[in-house]
Image 1 (cartoon, helix red, strand yellow):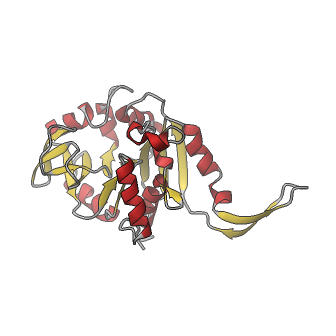
Image 2: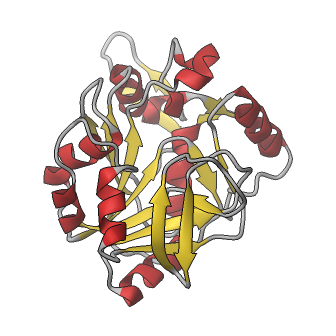
Image 3: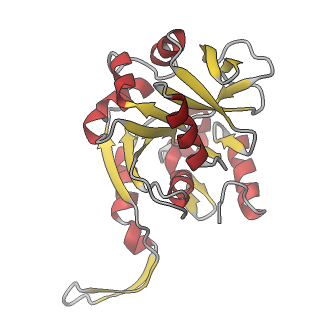
Length: 260
C-alpha cells in the first residue's frame, strides 16, 4: 500500500451476469474465482494498494452470497482453533485485511445508475470513486485521482483500448465529446470503469430504471463535464467464459493487475 487518502470506493456488484451463466446460475459474477479469490477481491486489492480501503458495494443478484463471503472473510482466510465446549476461537495466522466494507442491497432489478443513486447516503465526502465488479486493470489510482482534481469537472472515466466490442468514446484532448454505449464498433477508446465522481452527478440519475452508461453519462457529456483518464496499460473485463479463462491463465503466469 502506498499513501493514504480517505475516499469511498463504490463497486457495483448487483448484476445477473447472464453472459457467464455457466457460473452465475449459482453465484453472482463478482464472486467468480480467479485463482483462490473472487474477482471482487482482486479489484479491491488494486484500490487498497493505493491506500483506498473503504468500500461500498451495491448488491442485487444473490446478494446473500457476497454478504456471507465478507462476514466469514476473517475465518476463511486465517488458521484458527475453536473450542467447541466454550465457543472460543483462537486465531493463529491472521490474514485479514485492513478494509472497511459496507454491503448494501440495492434491488434485484435495479439498473447501474439506480444502484449508484441508492448508495448516496453511504457516501460521506463530495468526491468518490466507482467501478464495476467484473473488470481488472493495473491503473495508477493516485494518478487517476490527481487528474480528476486538476480538471475540476464532475466525472472522470477511465478510457481503455480493449478488443472492439464495447461502447466507444469520442475524445478531444481529454474531454469526452461523445459517449455511446455499444454502438457499431470501430477502433478507439472505450469506457473501462474506474471512475472518479462528484456527488452532484447523482442528481442526473432519475430512478432505478436508469443505466449509468446511458442518460446520466450522456447528459454530463453534453454539458462538457465528463473527462477521460487514458489508460494504456492492462485492462480486462470478465464478460464471458473466454474472458474468465484468460484471466485465470494470467493469474497463473504473473498477473499484470497485481501490484507489489
